[in-house]
Image 1 (cartoon, rainbow, N blue to C red):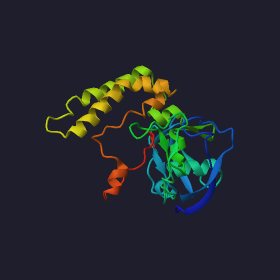
Image 2: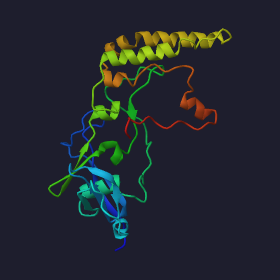
Image 3: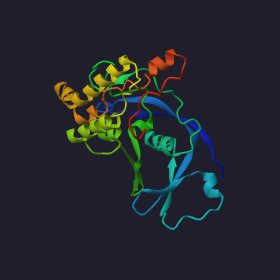
Image 4: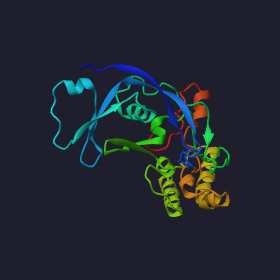
Amino acid sequence: MATKIISHPYKLKLPNSFLVDHSFSDGKERDSTYDGPDKVYLQIGADGKEKYGPLTEDDIADGRPKPLDVEEWFEVDCAASDLNALICQLRGPVIDEREEERGTGDYWHPGSPDLGSDYGRLGYSLPLMPDDIYDIDSIKVESGKITIEAFTPRQKINGVDKDKTWDDVREQRNQALTSSDGDIAEDMPEEMKTKIKAWRQRLRDFPKTMLDNGVEPNVAAMMLPNNPLHVDPASQEEEGGAPSDPWAPPGS
């Protein structure tokens, strides 16, 4: 028995609206390709969840014992269905995990208005990758069938499946104010002093600014005013430095 490497096209199901509506009723999808072992074996415990990392046929053929807390080595035939190809893409030792590059432009959350360069904005880049959409920790095997769930929008934005409140946003704002108490130095140019003072005032006004613009707390937490002491990626690129990576939601 030897692991066979395949290149298998499949349809990646996409959410109705990324970071807004992660249901799939609109039937959106795009072409993708899985490159890796033809079969992957998941080490499944009594609860139907993975206990350890996935195996290949070569791994199993080496005679290793099955761990005591593993009920079965569940075989996933990567070419058998779009779902199986997705599971293999997320869990298998793929040859080219990201055959496509991110960064084909900025796409903004519809609830994150453009308030100018003084404020952050919640956005993302395309194409969406499988691990942008699907939660590998949700993979489960029950009665011989494998399932996986999509992240909720708040999981992708906040890193946890819990909504933020205005109290959370105010606490985040307060931390930014506290950490910047000593940012103005006596020998600092007056222009920079003025910028920092204006930024701190924007922080004080931030909850009201967000409420006035109809922004909800999950999104507001990603739109804190930009600190003038931090280098703007665009300016950094113009000066010959490497631009920063585009923002990606927690868990990506």
